[in-house]
Image (cartoon, rainbow, N blue to C red; front, side, top):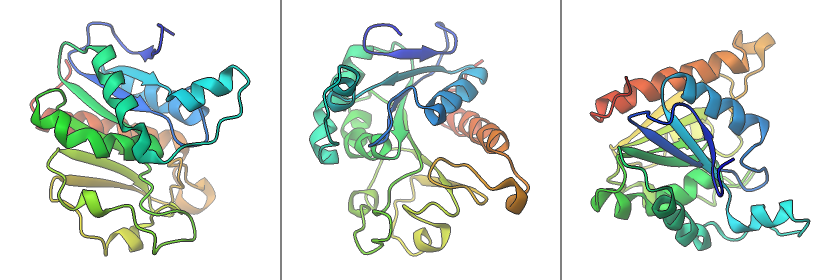
Length: 215
């Protein structure tokens, strides 16, 4: 932990990935920690941070998640405070990725970020497929990678197939993965570690396509 951020990976990594947490779990949840470690093993510098409501929970305050769009200023502030000197990719788990996606274009246009990564994008609330959170994704100009489990209750492969999404968005589908990208090994034949390795490998390839490949 270094002030506001939790870091993994080499300090001199050419590419930094900034990740925000989901609505209900902190930045050091098992899912986020495993993902950060997998990305760090590929040579990325991974920084995690918490929105104010989640940080307040560590002090014993019971704070519910606010509306995602109200967190946009906090994400912009985290980018500024991090002060990455090389290429920066922003993103996050679920709600964290959604918030990042809402500020991505302005940051990309101004040259502050190279791309966006969403881990389990919340396309709609569970059991409410009609309440889509995809309008801004149709015109997204930032190069984007979404890593999504095929049985994610926030957006399955069958559901997402029918959405209008920007051609800047690439989706990595993880077989039988849930909202944490975890599969049922007895059904899919894959373990959570297998899927994390696929995520890390795909992120490495995708970043290389942006012209920002780690050594």
